[in-house]
Image (cartoon, each protein chain N blue to C red):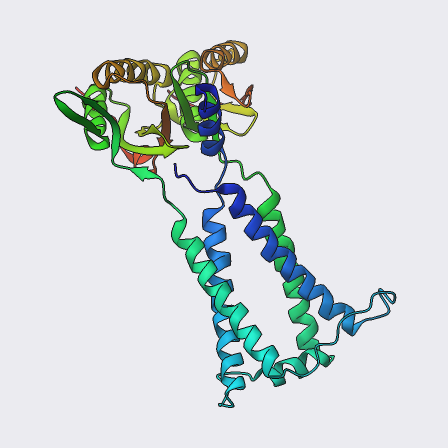
Length: 183
Length: 188
């Protein structure tokens, strides 16, 4: 889970799409003016110095803006899930600790192949994402019940109720793994 | 932001693609093209040799009528439409939201199919290899291959699968379809 601005992503893709569409349509209409005779299209003419420099400036702007946007993708993960201050000092809970806690609690579950915890911020509020990789044919209700107990315990330990996203994922390796048999 | 709104936001973001990958591909391509165009423009403005194509030549080419230009224009239109499609389509992931009062639970459709299949297998009392389950946005399809001579109670399978789904309460809602194949398999 990231804090990416998803609407902006789509707007950007749509803008580039419309631009390409318009450019392609413009070229086609120039070649076949019979299709839309009422449309008057601007003549590119030959490039002069101002045109060249302004093109270069716009191009540079596009490059910087594109790279800038690309770099902002994928942000939002934080290491600390919760922080509390009192007279004695500051206590922080690291997301890795949470991952260990959850993994320990899930250890007796044969259906779980992996646990991964990340803390992220959504609108400045911390949230916890737990990705649990489950074996094929896992007992979902039992898994969810076990997770509920873990999260309730966690709420008590860190003394806050953080929003939790539990993602039960299937893994390619999980489907190939065999159940341990005790003969 | 209230708790339910955060919950809903988390759920929505887990169930749909962010389009970050698409936007990165689009912007990288755009940056490359812009960098090239900008370099050619600067080179032409200072009177140096062009890298690949000089701007004047490019503009002249645009005024001609060649098939290459038309093909390129059609290509641009197609790519533009595809991009618009990507931008406007919801981009649902193969996941379902399960009801829970404390957490936002999102399961991959494969996992949901596995749980439903497990229940079906237990009810039908056949080996794992005989049950195939797949889950799409609104349907769970269970296919059972019976042992020769031992009939399968498909209604019972449907009932137990539906009971499991009712307990899990996935969103969007999932209907159960059970099909038992006519041809059985000999042996257990």
